[in-house]
Image (cartoon, rainbow, N blue to C red):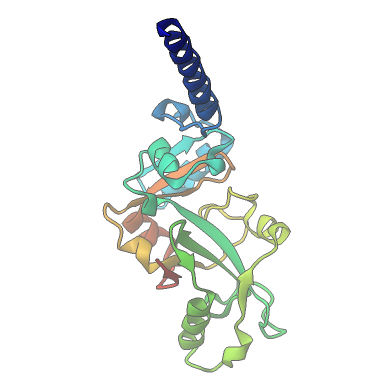
Length: 226
């Protein structure tokens, strides 16, 4: 009887060990701080660094991340970049006004541009209507509200205007001088140093918010719902 119980216990132990191994093999890997490559030296880094320094932005940092970075949860991305919080992780998106008057075809008039770049947090829900209402007010109601319909620009259009591909868009050093809208929530972050795309898909740029604002003079708009 004792031998049978011992054999049963041995089999149960083996089964539990096998189950544990299977569970761990299906868990997503969590990146460590060592997964971030600090040596981010490329032509893009050199070009953007020069632009930033020339325009009075001394506090910035570039970090290169692994190719599966966008598969990670925000908490893992935060740790990889040593960001202050997940709310300090931001992105730049290109919007197009699909209902702009026929004579509005480019970015010549920043108050009534065909395109805008919006910088918003990953943790926030972008509100296109807030941008629409802001632009309507910015033009003192001289343009009918129905002439503002902000939508995400096609990827090829974004690439053509900015020079940056998907997940690489940044509001620094764009091919076209597109007006920038900075979500008000980013301005309120503490500390005032946030991360966004760095011009390459695996390159991230950390920057001092106050210095960025002084440089690019963005419209600061409450355009997200947290």
